[in-house]
Amino acid sequence: MKHRGMGDGYWVFKGLPGEELIAGFTAALTELKVGAGVFTGIGAVSEAEIGHFDPVTKEYHKETLSGAIEIVSLTGNVARVDDGSVLVHAHAALSLRDMSVRGGHLFRAVVMPTCEISLRVFKGSIERRLIPELGLKLWQI
Image 1: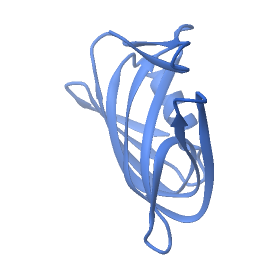
Image 2: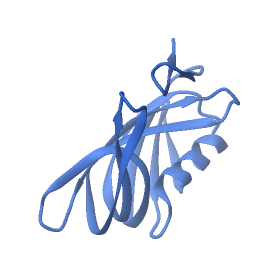
Image 3: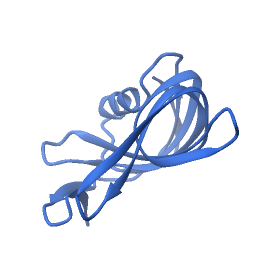
């Protein structure tokens, strides 16, 4: 994933055709040593896996979408987990060919033709830890 610093803690990222969006973004953030931040984005993908968390079962219901998919909205945050690795927490609203919109937690997506993300990096790090009774890794602040 291409990226460029814009000064004052702002970065822009460009997903390339065929690139796995979350993995590519995570790799770039790891390279840049980002410990915390928020991001937004737009673009398009050829495949996406989204999900909705069920707090009763503590599991995600997942759905895979394919075809020409517009990213109407991509938003999320960046934190670190117990082992120090980067965790990208992304949600997306995705427009399908019939103009219907599906949305939820974005697990993975294949960029086609591009995805443009802007990131605001925070000083320091935010850690996510598993809260067993909730079944989620949440911010520790």
